[in-house]
Every structure is written in C-alpha cells, then in structure tokens.
Length: 85
Image (cartoon, rainbow, N blue to C red; front, side, top):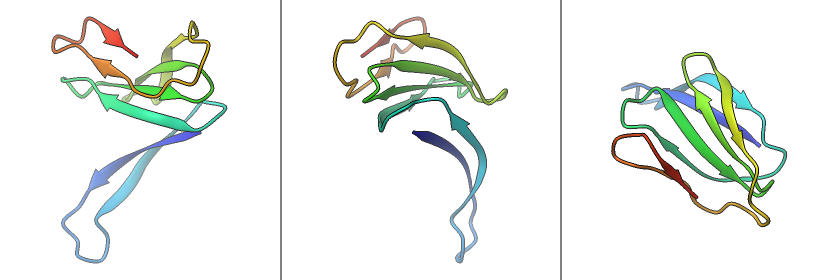
C-alpha cells in the first residue's frame, strides 16, 4: 500500500536510507517503474488502479481507474509520453 523512495548509500551497515513514503493505494502494490528522467514513478496495484507519482512533491499527480481486475505490471514508453498496464 506504500511506496518508499530510498537514497542508496555505500555504508556497509546500511545500504539505503528511506527518503519519502508515498501513500495512496488501498491494496498491495504489484509493480512500480521510474520514468527515464527520474522525476516520476508509476505504480500498479491490486486495488485496480495505476498512480503516477511526482517524486519531488511526494504526491499522486494522476490516478487511472479503468481496470476491472488487479493491475499486475506497468511501464513507461522510452520517451515517457505513454504508459501501459
């Protein structure tokens, strides 16, 4: 139900530090991908929705609700102008 954005570190005791927690889905998140510019994340969930996240703002910018079943995978096109689920 929650996405966590991690900052990777080189520390042997701690490989990453959570930077942001993104809340919004009401069921398990099945897939998440980053846009090629790193500004957005796209997530798909068993709640039958996709969410487009603005990572700098830490919020959902778009919600897609046309699925009738769980969303199992998501992807951006190479130019970030299309998504597919």
